Image (cartoon, rainbow, N blue to C red; front, side, top):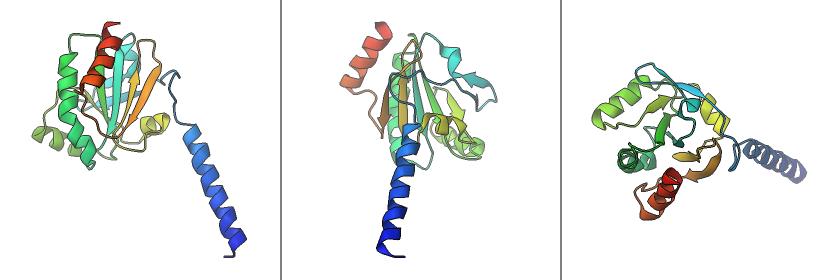
Length: 167
């Protein structure tokens, strides 16, 4: 392959990457509704939580930063359990029901865990770097996207979420 062919291939790849990323849901956009099953087989839709602050976390059992942040997600979920706040953890693994059930037996969490076994919601939200979290306001708009693991009990994060939940 000559130098011009390599340059053309590189330009095409970069163009495809840029086009793909432009389809990702962005801040200040309406969060697209979705329906997924939880581990009990119940259907859960984003629209079920209209008027609440919703934290949607995309994760996988093979992802160390995902696993690291889960205890702080549990504390966050418990802290706001009496508020208009819900945390939805969406597992993105194919054929994940048994994998997630076994994981949760060893690591019990009380927040809802949903299964996106065909990656439709993951693709809809353009979530490809795990963990990836989307925070949605009471009007159903995406406030922010957070890529990578976090201590969700960090004082800065808590003050922002407190403001959103109580404001």
